Length: 455
Image (cartoon, rainbow, N blue to C red; front, side):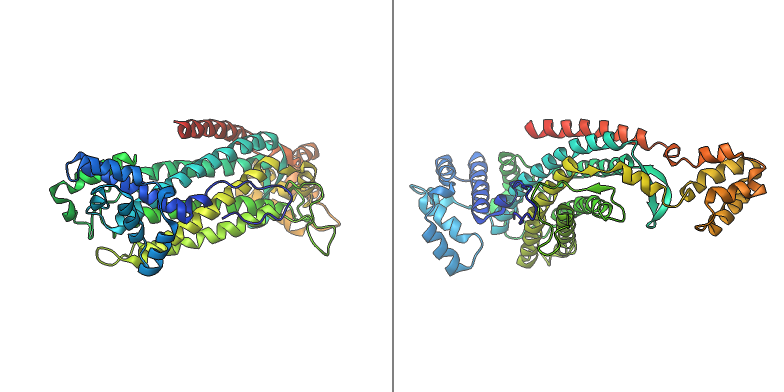
């Protein structure tokens, strides 16, 4: 689902939406039917010639669309008209062996997972494309000092590079999760009507294993149509990834406010932010990402509901899961594409970052000053002394002046020492180091993802 892009920067189609069109689904289902026929022929369940003919005709381009439309309208069934048309297309008696022993969900769920796996690979490629510019951003901003904020208030100095290092760290864990879930999620299902595999005789699990192998998938250990937890897991993992995207976007959205002015989205010349306010430069990409990420997260409760499938199968939960997967995957591709654009083009404003550091006139350096004084009088007494100065600071007396005038303080630390400790750029800890380390990690992980996708 390609969203409207309000800015003049073009947002490429990531290629996810097309995977979930009706035609793409039908072809995926036919691919499963072909794999089923091959597996059954290999085990002597159907004639080899019939399987060859079924495989040849599992091409949606050969199908009569009018017959399909009429069949789906008349039957209101998800798959039967497609099976009928496949059987009709097959020469000789091959059509008699189409869909042998299978039930609808065996084919549709497995076929949908083929499409979901393609989308999954696209998402990994998109994360790789995000990690590379984030690595560059981390290196560029590793020493850009700004206020570290907790509870919305100035805490201690940090650097913008620390923010980027955090984003990289989170995206890297998402890659780990997505890769780890693959053998659990992308499993072929072939258990027959109620998961008993009775329609395949004593070779039921062998048929499933061979069909799965033809599709390059593992087979479900217990091929039950009621099992949905693995599908719900994938929705939840994508929702978690979306949450990180939303967090990333919200940080940029907030940083663009004039009160902060620390960053700005990439904007092409001629972009209009408002029809009535000519000065507006709105954070379109950030807002898109936050909106899409929120919609993705709303699919988690729906996905979890599908785990509560009644008895051995329930069409209700299958439909719910398909809807959740469609929504999540379509929005996920568009979300990640916008994250990439922001990562590549984010404008940093170090001069505003530094100006914001000075807004509290030295108060942001209360912690290092307390620690320095604590070496002489103990931490708790030092906390009380610095606390007193911080609480009475107003426009007439600066934090520095109050400290210099306090004998509890100036008897231990000189004015020169105080002035040196009030420099916020000297108290950013290991922000620069962490930014550098995560930049290296991001590039290595991106290279590894790219190599695995090409394999």
